[in-house]
Amino acid sequence: MTRPTGDAIAERAFSQIGTPFRLHGRMPGVALDCVGLVAYAINANNVVRDYSLKGVKFLTILSHLDNCDLDIVGDYSTVCDGDVAVVTCSPQQ
Image (cartoon, rainbow, N blue to C red):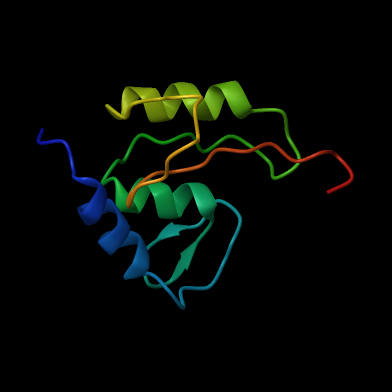
C-alpha cells in the first residue's frame, strides 16, 4: 500500500466539508464523525469503532492510527497539511 501524502490526506478531508456529523459515522458524503473523517482521509478501513465521545479510548485510537502506517509524534511545534491532532477532552467537555 502506498502511503498517502499530507496533501492527499488534506484534500480527501476537505472534500467532506458539509457532510453531517453522526457518532460512529463511516459513510463519506452521508455521515461522518471525527474518526470516520480521518479514516476516510487516510483511506483506512480498520480504524477503531468502539468508543464514545467522552470515553477514555485515547490509547486505543492511537494504536489504530499507528496500524494505518502513520507517524505518531508528540511534538506539535510544526503543523503540515494532512497532520491529524488527537486530543482528549475532560468528562465535563
